[in-house]
Structures are given as C-alpha cells and as structure tokens.
Image 1 (tube, rainbow over the protein chains, first blue to last red):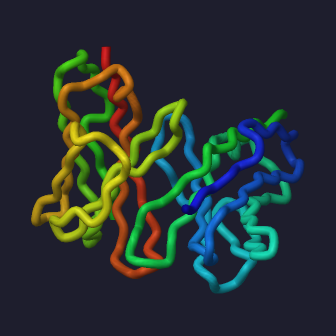
Image 2 (image 1 turned 135 degrees about the vertical axis):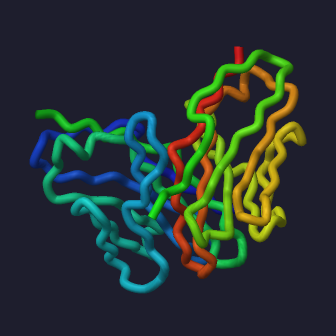
Image 3 (image 1 turned 120 degrees about the vertical axis):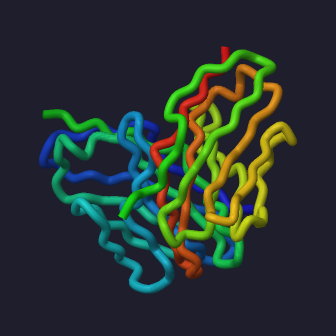
Length: 114
Length: 113
C-alpha cells in the first residue's frame, strides 16, 4: 500500500532562510508526487507535481522539489523564505493507474520568523 | 475562469441530523473528488465521480454518500451525523488526462454539536 511520511509537523525558519520540508513515500513503483499548500480557512493549492519527466521540479512562488528514487524522497525547498510562505504544506502521492485517489501526508506547518 | 465552488462554506448541525454539501467543478472538468480533513486523521479520500459514475471510494461508512449530475456538479450527503463527522470537507475537480492535477475548493466546514 502507498503511504507518505512528512518529517516534522512544524518547521520554523527565519525570513530569508532556506526552507526544507521533507517527504518520503512508500510505493512499489514510482508514483506521481505532489506538494500542496493550505492557507488558513482555505482549500489546497498545488505548488508542484512530479510526473516522471524531470526529477527537479519547479513550482510556483519559488518552490522546487527533487524526486530521488533511491531515497524514495520528494523534499520541498525554497532558497529564501518570505513571511507569506507561512502555511501548512502537504505532500501527496498517487498511483500511475486509473485511480485518482491522492494519499496525503500528515502535513507540515511552516512558521516564518521576522 | 471560475474555480471550484463549494456551498455552504460553514454549517452547524446536531447529532442525528443529515447534511448535504454541494460542489461545482471548474468548467470543463468532468471528475469530482471529495476529501475529509480533520486534525486527528488529516486528509482522507472519500470518493471520486466521473461522468455521473462513482469511480473510487474511500474507507468511510455507508452514511457517507455522493452523486454527480450531468452538468458535473456533485453533492455529498452524510446521514445520522456523529460528533466525529465535524471536519472540513474539500471538493476537487480535474481534467481528464492521466497526469491531471486536482484543483480544490475552499471547503465546507461542518460542525456537529
């Protein structure tokens, strides 16, 4: 069965510092991988997705993620945190078949200190 | 282009009642999925509809049901509400290609008293 593990329920960084949010997946074959962001009282917004093209994926708002098959990881990074990045981030996985069910990680709340 | 629209945004019910939530997908999207989000269980898949047919169902009791209409709008219903049904219910729609990403609405926040 597929699963997603996000290390760290809370991550705190200073404004301008590197953001690193960790995601590891469990799947027998490389799946599709996604990062979503959720701001308070809002739905989920897609940041980026991996669909077996380039292993380094660039997303919106300066975020990017690298798919590493050997480490079954898909960590999210941003070189310089902005106050507006404070939100909850979810990693998700989906099988490459007709099922469109997303399996989500438990989420990581990013706090940005001024 | 209008996004995914969910109504109502907030509602309060009492135990034993039932509730119906509505979702209008992005124009042209024929697939609609529903997710439940709670602090304890996180985001969990409820079901997916495509062209009025349920394609996939999550591990929820039969009190949770849904349907999709010919215009792709979808409703989900929860009968005999329990306190544990308090959650944010998120609807998402997608295009039909295999890598189609999900576009989420802002959710319907249900409180069961």
